Amino acid sequence: MIQKVLRVGTSAAVTIPKKSLAELGLKIGDTVKVDINSVAKAVSIRAIKTGLDNQKKIAALALNFVNRYRNDLEKLASE
Image 1 (cartoon, rainbow, N blue to C red):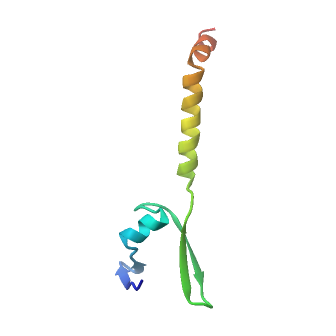
Image 2 (cartoon, helix red, strand yellow; image 1 turned 90 degrees about the vertical axis):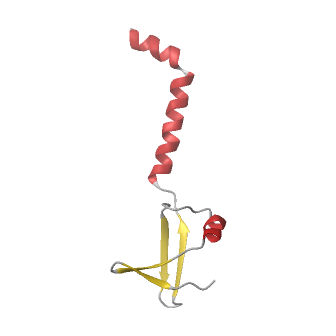
Image 3 (cartoon, helix red, strand yellow; image 1 turned 135 degrees about the horizontal axis):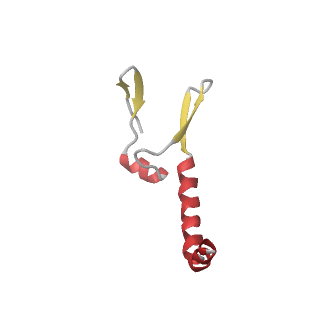
């Protein structure tokens, strides 16, 4: 695919078509790692897991724990 380099303020950007985003499993707002190979004059991007993904997993595990042991936790809290 051929894309143009666009001016964005004092920076530059290359757009990624919607179909390509879907193929990569990316969506607007995702964090990506950009690698530059100056010898090959190539740029590559890849999705990375953010701390937010880990926080969501921890929150889900904690909620599951609380729901599973709610009665026991309430008894402990009342003692």
